[in-house]
Length: 355
Image (tube, rainbow, N blue to C red; front, side, top):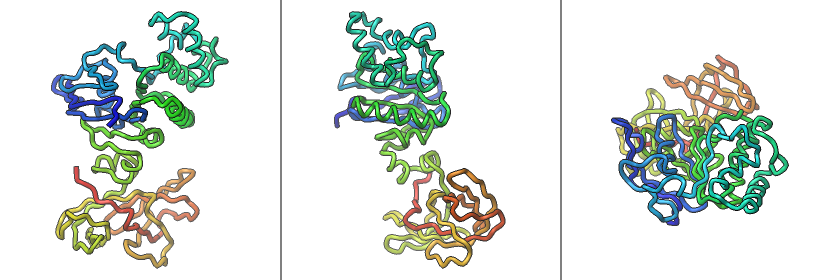
């Protein structure tokens, strides 16, 4: 594999706390890899091992085929974008972007050309004389991107770069970052706890939990085929249902949950009497008025809660002893206390490995 970055058995401890536990991860040349997980999962520690701000207690870090485990940060040819923009308030946009070139002692004429190339890249060449206080949050973050890219690094590293922006601006900046990374063809590592950012931006996602890698895959794979209960719960919304396998019939398994029976896709390892945890996404459950004929996995329930969310409606439906979360486009609306019929399509149910 053509890896630009490779972590081999990387372990980092803070006293008794193991922040990174035997991390093995290869990041392909030209891809955008997101390290995703909750606070304290180890994603920033992994990033800092890549940057050289931390040295692993065990394992090796490679960049472009070179072992850089003991190489100082300033010699790793990395561009870094931070959460707080980290712009110098007393410097203009031009001076902020020029700064990495000045400390590298590049000639003034060469610096000028490289800075203006970087500002054109982010469409801010007209702002070269502005100060950070005169810019919006999104513009400041774009200047941070230009400063990270001006000296043409091998790798771009972004540590929660959009967390200080409002929701609409975050969404706009996601597309700008993705477009910029694609146009440059640069390898990028993006750290976030925001699953929507990870799914929207990434070529692949590395989900972390408790210092370990839970799963690495494309956004589609992570969302549709989570490898553990943690991933299924962390990425998107899920209804988890635990039952007992009653029978396996070809490609389907019948699962009993109290007085209900569900059909789910079978796997070769399923056997009668096995305990099974499966899940379905709330937007994959179909909701109908009473009287709908239905088929497999069709049940009657009662709306216990209804929440209007603008582009969708979020329901909690009591079905036997279960409460299922269901999300619809709101074209047909049901009120709290109303009896309804819901269907869980068999092909959208997924059995998962218990954590």
